[in-house]
Amino acid sequence: MSFGTMITIFLGVALVNNLVFSGFLGICPFLGVSRKVDMAFGMGCAVTFVITVSGIVTWLIVHGVLTPIGNAIGYAEALYFLKYVAFIMVIASMVQLVEMYLKKFFPALYTAFGVFLPLITTNCAILGTCLYIDMKPETQHLLNAAIYAFGGGIGFLVAITIMAGIREHIRFSDVPKCFQGAGITLLVAAILALAFTGFTGIGK
Amino acid sequence: MADENGSNLRQFKEGVLSNNPVLVQLLGMCPVLAVTNSVENALVMGMAATFVVVMSNLITSALRHHIKPHVRILIFTLTIATFVTIADLTLKAYMYQVSKQLGAFVPLIIVNCMIICRAEVVAIKNGVGRSLADAFGIGIGFTLALLILGVVREWLGSGTLTIPGLEPFHVMPAAFTENGHNWVIMILPPGAFLTLGVVVAISNQIRARHAKGGAA
Image: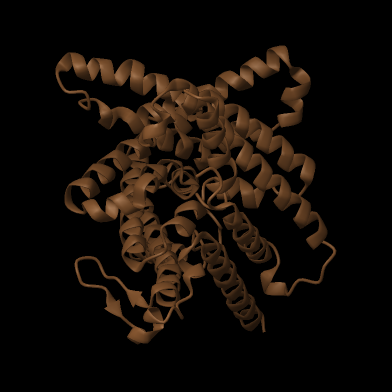
């Protein structure tokens, strides 16, 4: 694994195929928790953390548990139908674990994350990234999978923080009544997505 | 009994129109944006989500007296994950091309907040009949919203409408796509955000007018 491949994977998932703007993952928190920059940043950090940990653990589950047992039965994909149930269990328990760990050892960080941590379980960015890691050929190595997951989290962090910065300014503008709230946010997201398509081609 | 039927019908109607999961509650946005680049994908996705929400509401409401409150979210998630696996394998077996295009968004129905919201808000508190009526309403409301986006985006983006099992139907003259007049942006990600933003604004406007008319 060369260093260049890792950079390509990282930039690819963080900018070119940004989770929010081109993968449509994590839209609910992107619309719901992007009113203030500090909240958005906290949410982004929490997601990055959980996404990296669950990306690694689900990779280990597929390559360390499901495939070997399947091979022992005689067919490598024999247990793959258990993937989705296993993934969602891993994510839910990872979130619990992270919550307990932070509460015990980093109470300041725990209070800063607040209500966001339990919400992350149903954030489709996490499950989506785990599924993509499982599907893509370049993430067959653990290190690449970890970089992919981390890059995805950073992409989400960048997207939600930019959005929150713009929304803080929208509050002072005269938005037509029917566009207030979700409508204008989606239109801004459309323009941001257009900007992010400009990254297409980097790292090829 | 008649009253019971009436309230079930109302529950169904609410899910489709006044309480539409996408346009009013803004839940389950990820698949709405991701799979609406063609009518075919939108329809299949809507049907899969409807199946999952109906089955999850059925199981949850049937077992509601046995589910302990502190493990309910876990039970909901596992029930949903089971039916999503069934839906995913069925799609792979019978509609392979579509399931390939939908990609990760079929398994992502598991974390669709709309479905877990129905289990938490309706199915855990109400009987099987009412939960089923609610699930069908929400499912059809979701499919309807997907179809609106799918029709707009495919019409403007590629000038066709694709119905599952049939050849793509050309709504625009051939010159529309041949000379590059089609709005490619509509099938790309920005078009999804743009269309949904405008559709949500239109639905807000209609509801605001409706509420005003009702009050007067």
